[in-house]
Image (cartoon, rainbow, N blue to C red; front, top):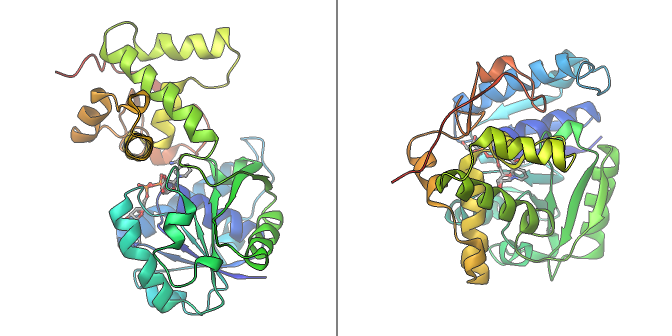
Length: 302
Ligand code: NAD
């Protein structure tokens, strides 16, 4: 049993905390928002209850929740052996957080960044312990996904990597080794097609349902790019594609204006109840299912 801190109790933090609890670890879940903490506990309870139905193992939600304590104070991480950071994909926010983690965590504690795009070497440079900073790009919904991208920073020590690798194994994850490049492998690919799918809607070429239908029926993908964008969060997609655009200074990552318009409108996908689709009562549905999707004509945003 390892004491693991999880910072950020949104979509990913809740999934990571649940998966750690299922693996028997003791979890300290920290967020700046009390509401996010209580919503994440509700989400974990629901996802444990629905695990079997979604093809996962039977999970005792009470046992999992008994292993998770919550706090809005980073000082609660003082005993953590590993901290997994899952806060908003906003470089300024992450940049402010890491020096604080450096202060409150034990010197030997390994810091794991769960980021969609920010290079791990850059994150390590915000701390005084770049040898103890590694990247794990978890997939959503975390407890249902068998693999992660595992990313060493330039200075990450073999000992730190082994600690994280062992933790991932205990969580039932296959760690796929990926070099430290902005967006890693998965998001270099997926964010280009989600952004391009948003352009197709923006330009009026097709609606979201038709685009997703092509992916499902013609390519055989279980989900289309815009259903996936709603599951991930339109705000997270926009923030990540902006990181790719800034990092590579390449127009192929130019964020679709429709994504910006949707974020301004609060249409963030499943987490807000509406994105490219309308989602009925988000918390009544477990993560991972297609749920009750009703297409919304998003149209072009002028
Ligand atoms: P989210 O918006 O659902 O949750 C982010 C949480 O971070 C919120 O609860 C917010 O209150 C909290 N937060 C913000 N600043 C904080 C701070 N300083 N201290 C503590 N908590 C803070 O986001 P998410 O989808 O869970 O994504 C989290 C991270 O995981 C991002 O870096 C994202 O790129 C990455 N990621 C997301 C997905 C996905 O499918 N959504 C997949 C892989 C990786």
